Every structure is written in structure tokens, then in C-alpha cells.
View (spheres, rainbow, N blue to C red):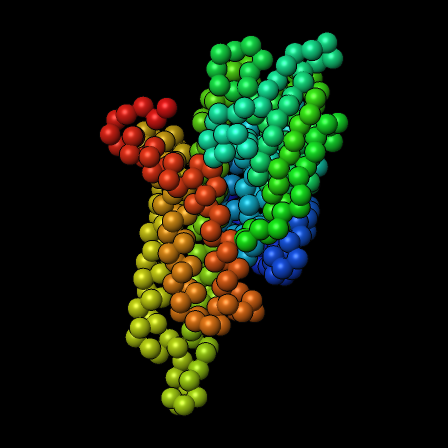
Length: 377
């Protein structure tokens, strides 16, 4: 984490505790995109957190971005995921984009996102089937993208395709969202993260200029693994950590405030069994937090074990969140199934991490290869 993090979190706090928290339930119940969160962060100058200082940004690190996402996730998983994807795309633009687009990001005038996952290769996001072809008018893109967060609200997509000429697996492009030939799919109506506007996007004869290419032809795999994967893994894990914190806070409030009138007003927390459950959840959440913090340190300081931590952190935090949220539901009992308690929203939002590419199952395979000294690909 950099020297700017404390100032960034101080600016974020009233946004998270006020604007985002106030509309978290509405975002979930109505499945509405959290424009309020994006606008508030833009007004505070936080959308350019990872944008270089020379372009008007704050020059923040992946660890800085991860801490911002964690704080937002304590209040609203959908808002946290939208910001996670924005910073992921903005980090690519910081390294491979031009001055104009980076200035727009820094000014809060450009909402970014990733468009990597596809119907044909599913969670294997590093292997796009979409194509890029050189024709007289420029470069033509054709694709069937899936699960694009902020699909109908992003300014442009950081987009993967097969290369124009290279034998490498992929090339990365910046594709404006208003490009002719882009067709977003149906509105997202999912179990959790209901406000993140995640849907498919079909591209039919979409024309982009060669200057919209981010990095060299065939350089997509290196950008995905070297630039996107570390910051995305940290921030996705931050979502899981934040959701655990938000849920545990609500669970403790419920356990401490719910009374048994026939037992002289004893609370749920007076029961040793309930305290045992809460203790186990707290230990698990703290263990996940420490893994996440260590991974942030490993990436920001380019430690030798950084890639191993990058592989571990999303699977570890995501799966732990499933366990912690299950405990929260159990402690709150029947009340957990009522929306006014709030725990079930965190429970639903936490389900996404383990199946979001790279999935936990894929990551465990990669981790196994890494500890055995085998090539990942």
C-alpha cells in the first residue's frame, strides 16, 4: 500500500457509510446499477485511484485499490464489484492506454470494465475465441462475450480477442461502449450482486481503430496475467473480506439484541453455542483478512512469492466467505431469511466469488501446480 492510502480511505469513508450504505438495500432489491456510488467516488476524485499522477490520477497501487473495494463491500457487494472491475480496466489503461483516456479516468468521466469471459471458453478467460480482422476500414471485432460487469453503463470495455497476426493466444483492445454493432444481452436478474449490471455482449462487425489496441498484437496473455490478474485477484478477495465483515457486524448486532423474554431477557449471545459459532466465524474471517493483507503486500512490493499469493488469495477468501456467511445465517436462524436483518444479502453476494473466473476449482489446480514446481499453462 502506498503513502496515499490513509487520505484515500478518509475521503471514501463518508461515501461508503453514507451514500453507498443508504442505497445498498434498494440496489439489491430493485437490481439497479449503483450510479450513486460511481458518481460520489468521481466527485471525490477516487475513480482515478490507479491512474498515473502525470495524467491527473492518484498513482495508487493494487493494494490501495483493494482496500477501497473492501471498505465498499462492507456496505454493498454490487457497488464493490463495479468499482473492482473499473480499477481492473483502469490499471490496464494506466500501463497501456493513451494520455487522453487516462485523463478521462482521472477526471471521473470514464467508467471502465473488463470484457474477457466468453461463451465458448467460459471461465478460461485467457483463451478468447472472439476474432479481430484487418479490413480496409480498420479492425473488425466479432465476439460473444459473457458476464461483463457494468455492461450497459461502462464508457468502454477492456476487450480480449484472438490476435490479428500473432501466434500468441490473445490481444487486448479498448472498445467504446457506443460502438456500432455491440449488442448487450438481457438485464441481469441474478441471485446476488444484483446491481452490477453483468450481462453478455455480442459484437458483430464492430470497427475499432488500430490505435485502440492496448499493448502489442499477441500481448494479451501477458497483460491478463501480469497486469489484470494480480489486481483483480486482490480486489475480488477484498470483496469477500468486506462481505464477511459486513455480515458479521449484522450477525453480532442481531445476536446481542435479540432477547428471550421467557429467560429473563437473555440474549442469543448469552448462549455458549452462539458465542462458539461467532468465535469460529471471527477466526475464519481474520485468517482470510491476513492472507489478503499479505497478498497485497506481496504484489505491491513485488515479492518473490507474489504469484503464489495471487493464486491463493481469491480461492482462500472466497471459500472462507461461504463458510462465514453460512455461520451468520445459522446464528440468525429464521430471522436471517428476512431482508430486514440484512444477512441474507451478504450471503447471496458472497456466492459469486468461487465461480467467478478464475474459479476456485481452477485456482486450486494452479496452486497445486505451483507448489509442485510445475508450469501453470
